Image (cartoon, rainbow, N blue to C red; front, top):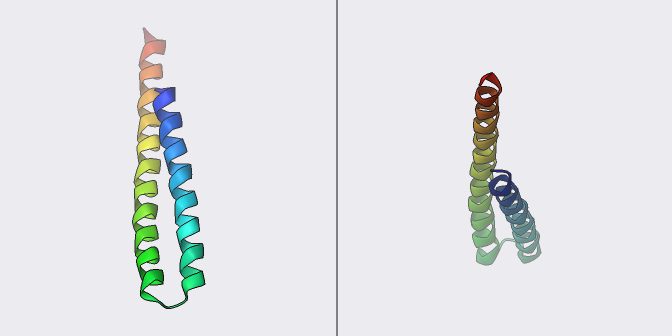
Length: 73
């Protein structure tokens, strides 16, 4: 489970870095269509990162629940 969690956290970090790069590129292109496309793509990646963060939280909650069950055995 910890390996899965670390992988998801790495994915989130990579997505956030890609988003930041896209936003920087969009700022350089000003009000062009390319800038608009970069902003749309970056927003989609932000949503994906948010979903992965939620997944990590759910995974953590599941792990804690299982640890609690094991402690009572």
